[in-house]
Amino acid sequence: MVAYGIYFGAANSVQQIAADAARTAISGLNQTERQTLVASFVTNNASGYPFVDASKLTYQANDSVADGSQFVVSIQYDARNLPIWNLFPGIAMPGTTITRQSTIRVGGI
Image (cartoon, rainbow, N blue to C red; front, top):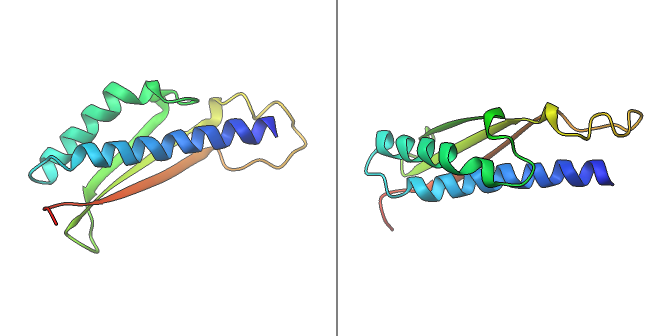
């Protein structure tokens, strides 16, 4: 339970970073401004989330290909450095990369 609790805590933090970065991006007037806002948010804030080493994050931030009125922030976290992998070697564990995304509508109502 401890190992999975740490993993779920990290996964929740990654999801929250994606959601917070997407909300920050909404103030950008175009894709380039939104990408700059996401980069700034991740750089300045990601280390403040529980179980996350900001240097292990990668992200993409782009207008949605399927719906141009939406902006998508995807975050990948290399979770190999979490202390859970050696706690219980016999237990099946989830993958070492946590991927989450958040979508937000742009352009007003």
